[in-house]
Length: 448
Image (cartoon, one colour):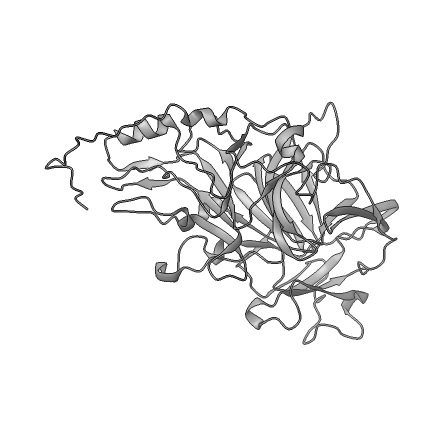
């Protein structure tokens, strides 16, 4: 959207004020007796007060009216949004979904909240430890309505259609091949411009951070300077018939009414903010000699657990890159994993399964469920002439990987009617190439 401005950096101490009200940020203190312009000071805390300074998250908002002025919350329908992981029996099979249907705007108006559908998840928002994966499919903008997730952070991955997100901190336009993160408790509204679809990773009890780089060094993967945080923007908007606040709390939805827009923050400062990132800016690390590196080298963001090196969830991408490994089967290897792997496709064709896995669809390979290249991929790449080649041109696949053993919802297994029940057949034609009389030839030894 023309005219939107952003500040650069990840986890910075930002400060911003709407240019219509210069000097609206108090000088030298957070909570003056009287704020400039007669504003109210309100702190939004994303961590305990006593967290170490390196992980302490909070922002101060200077607003026309405080968010506490609202009518009581009442329960509302959750639709297909759920945290009930025992709706159906566990299913350890490889699962793949065809592109999820988007409701036609001519048939039914569906906004972002009404279009939320939980596919799978595990854990518990009450104990602040867990994960949920949702799809959003919608066709109309939220009017005089906003959403707040009291349970955790939302990582939003648009797949079809850009979304304009208005937050208490300002506005962000997020297009396919970009992502955004709305952290716990931040109120936001979503405008759409056509039939729209995307994926959401929700984590309870942790915030997303950049992965440690270790021996990679000081630079690489998702660089902090490429993350963008919106600048302050406010509206002094009275809604006589009532503005609706929708709150996700302990896995359920509640709503309340107030007579003013919550996007009335004239100025703010702090390090607890929404942000966006363009996946094209990812600096890809890849193997340049032999073998297939583990996909952890493609991690954009991670939400760490209390166990070192183990994530509640990682957000991993498979971007366009060069493949140059010698004496190597270059696509992803066959695998059984102690982690759950949920994959989505924003655009293009995923290298390990060029047919069947489509943009707007998904797959889930659960803990210790075997997975890997289909028969066509294996046969083609086992005999291919190895030369430098572009991999995944015009493609962006991604993975939500979690240490949780995720349960699939009734909507994911049944109600959505998008489960590809023939998925297992893509491996059925794999045949044995075992030759007990095989002998090494003079040119079979690797030349790394």
